[in-house]
Length: 193
Ligand code: ADP
Image 1 (cartoon, helix red, strand yellow):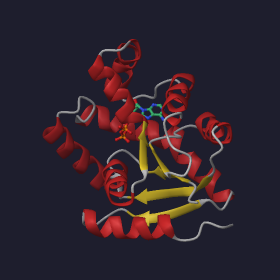
Image 2 (cartoon, protein in one colour):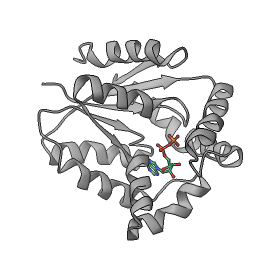
Image 3 (cartoon, helix red, strand yellow):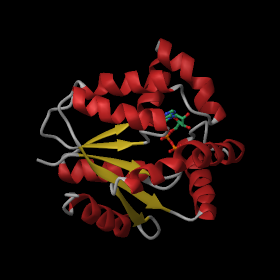
Image 4 (cartoon, helix red, strand yellow):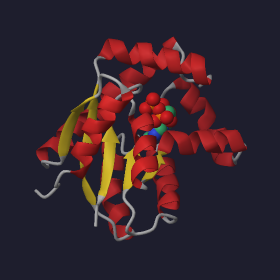
């Protein structure tokens, strides 16, 4: 039975696009904390009202709120179905929470895939997405902030997973199809350590 996988990568690296593709093709479940927050904002829930200014500023939602939302979502996932965590964990506290959450639900983590994209390309991609999708945090000023916040809080997690021999790096440049092939290969290769 496959374990769960974490997709890591800076804003604009294509995690969400690729996770959605794998969900369609393999029947896996995408758990995107960004999408979950946006759904709350859209629905006008208390949580949505609380996190909207945070997303608009490009900073991180507090760990306890994020972790509780993930716990809630995990309750609905059938045991034999692989989850792709997209945008979670983003802090060391969240990385620790992943271990306890998975234990709580009788799940296990196979490993972490890092989608590597050069910095200049990230800004181009996100600006384009902002124009197409109208995401309120995809404007140049907020993107620079998000990349900073990522570098400061999330990048160090790569080292955390590398030390545990759990990290695989995938080249995130090229066409969506090319990247998808590399990712599927990385996700489906044996994870035994
Ligand atoms: P991106 O990876 O392009 O920044 P996401 O949709 O994953 O886009 O996240 C959008 C925003 O949602 C983040 O800037 C942050 O405010 C919030 N967010 C998403 N995931 C987390 C998380 N794990 N912890 C804290 N905040 C998060």
